[in-house]
Image (cartoon, rainbow, N blue to C red):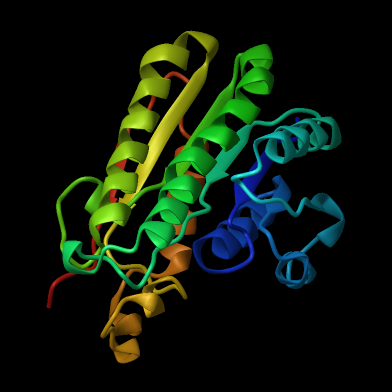
Length: 236
């Protein structure tokens, strides 16, 4: 039976690595991001580009995301795994430099956008009585960290609780949810941290590590819900 995965934020970083890992594992992969060209580049690198569907969309566009889910479920014969990965961070992160425009944008993408994607998937997963939702949260979604920023930390704490609510309320429908909570991952997002040293990237969690973790979660016994996985680079 074909299994279909939908990956948001698939144009680079963690989402790109997840796309490649699931494709190599035999999944039909649907990719979403705002930039079509980035998605086309990712698909071109896959072992079988014919088993990939490009669906450009903005997760903050609720109707557009609902349409994307319908299109993916029809194309893939269902919607079995969601990698709810789209997210942003911003340069102005502290109370001493409040920037409401960027803070509001972050919360809209990281919380409302995540909710939009979840809500779009639920009808199909409920009908199937089967579905795995994997959310890219963060270490700062479990533990306070000043480097993540006020708005970002709040958004990732929210995402962890959103994931927990799915296990509580949707388990009866065969739906399981996992929040992945990594510390620093070597992605373009990290380069936006003020004062970050790019030479540190090699010692951090790699996007491929996150992809392997997501694939493990997706393959778990359907009777088991993995609520959270916290990852950190080894301290040396």
